[in-house]
Length: 209
Image (cartoon, rainbow, N blue to C red; front, side, top):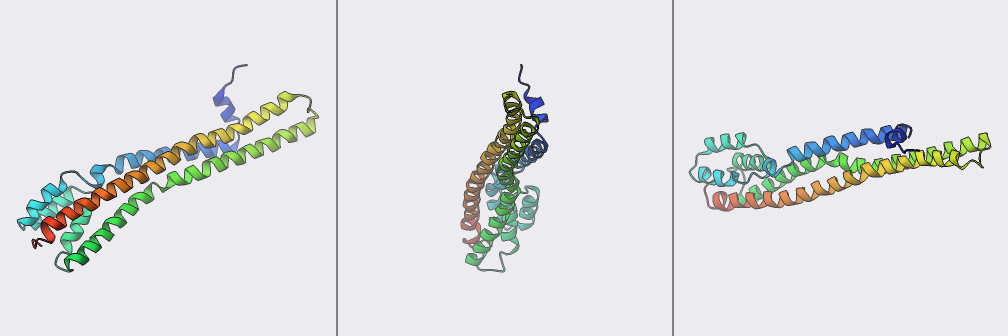
C-alpha cells in the first residue's frame, strides 16, 4: 500500500491545522524580515559619505532632506543627532544617540519574535496531537477488542506521530531563522555604531555642529 503523506496529514487532527497556521506565520514573518531587515534598511553603505560633506559645509537643510529621503535606522539616528546638536554636550549627545539607535534596533528585533514563538509552540502542539492520537488509538483497541490486530494500533500510532513530525518540521526552520536574524541584528548593530562614530568624529567632535 502506497503511503500518501498529504492524506496522513489531513487525517492528523486539529493539531496539524494549528501547526499549518504556525508555519504560515513563520513564513510571513521570515519574508517580511528578509525584505525589511536588510543592511540597506539599517546601515546604508554610502550614507555617511554623503552626510559628512554636507554637515561640514553647514548645509543642514539639504542634510535634513537627504536623511528623510534615505530612510533607515542610521538616517533616523543622524536626524536625532542633527535635531539635538545644540541642546546637549558632545558626550551626552553621543550617549543619547546610541540609546536612540538601540531602541530602533530593539524594535527591529521584536518584529522577528514570532519566529521564537513558532519554534517553541509548534513542537508542543505536535506532542499534544500525538498524545491525543495515542489515547484515541488505545480507546479504539479497548472498545473493539482488537489487540490482536496490530494494524489497528499501528495505523493510529502512525497518524499520531505525524503530529510530532509536523511540529518539529515547522519548529526547526523557525528556530534557525530566529537565530539568523539575531546574528544579523548584532552584525548590523556593530556597523551602525561604527557609522555613528564616524559622523561624531568628522562632524560633531570637530566643532562642525
